[in-house]
Length: 326
Image (cartoon, one colour):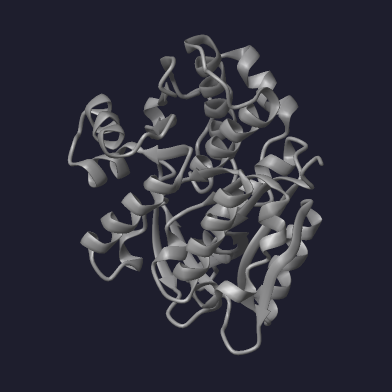
């Protein structure tokens, strides 16, 4: 039977309050943008025509209602989104520098996304999905950490591919050591790893990308690993034990970056799109290079607008940028 969903994601859903100017009184103005890395990935996949669903928890409050309505309007299934009557929706305040890079202030202690319980996880969604995508923010606190582990086991039993993006936010961890331990756990469970170069160095202690990837493979046989490098592009590595490939792509620096929120999530979604369209068999270097280039173009477009979830680029926009070049 054909799976009902292409990708289901589990993790955080929240409101990103993005700095958007100054009032007449000189106070900062912040726009309430629906967000959360797993949902950003799903939004891009939905934009590319894929069937998606989300598993997580928000407050049964003004923001939780906004999030549920936004996900639904973007074509993301919300039957796995629980609304809590006792915990509030997580908030993040985002300050963007002139080059588009961000700093965060999270309001998350005791909030709903950390309170997801294993018995609240809609396992049927996972069993009906081709891919389960996850990050580490759902591993920072219980009971959400146990819920995530249960979801990953269900995906494994169902034969679904598992896609992991650490999305490291150190202020949300009680120690760097525990963050590193949970990232290694996430790596140990995945078939597809998207990791930023600074996260790779944090995890492995290697500044050299090739050596860092090898350190991961020395511990866990992850076939497909992509490493994002911001304005320096990305690299990709494939090795399934029978064939191997390596490729890279530059970033599309001709666009005007104003906010990098969601760029990595857009990139990750486009790699999953390639797999959904063409299978998870052997990647040639040419196929991998094309996938990286498409993903970099889409990520670059995301940086030209504020927010992420509701402003993902259309496929035609991506193809037009690919035609124009970097």
